[in-house]
Image (cartoon, rainbow, N blue to C red; front, side, top):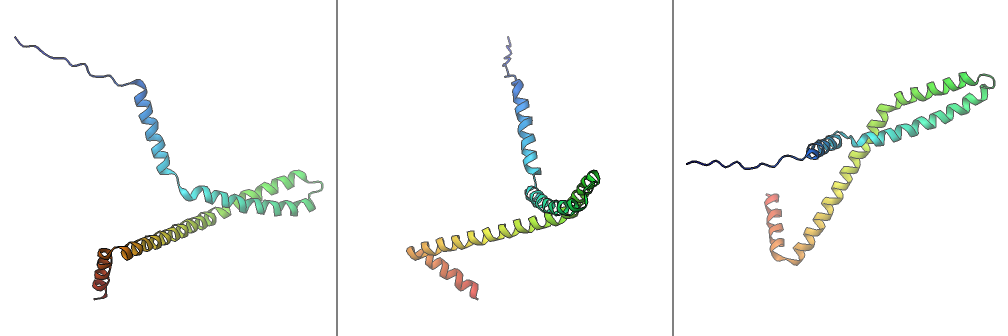
Length: 139
């Protein structure tokens, strides 16, 4: 007589699917985040606010009875400045981030070379390896 085994498979927890989808969502949001975007927006807002302050000073002199017209002109200047400075701010921030990355890479390489040289001074085998590599590169 044959008998069949029916193993009871665990049922997935109802919250497990929601947790997995939330984790995938946060992971995709983190990958989509542009590092230069936040800094460029801050730089752009600083430039626009400086321009709006200057425009406010200029408009204040002739806006005695035309308060609504001055307010509209000030907002037009603000929005035009946002549109004008957006590309320049993004390029400037991208260049600053690239320069910072290159600088930190140079510093890291210099520290690694210093550590290797300190190890080579203490260990003759490492010094022999460095001398052999130097002689191979000189050929």
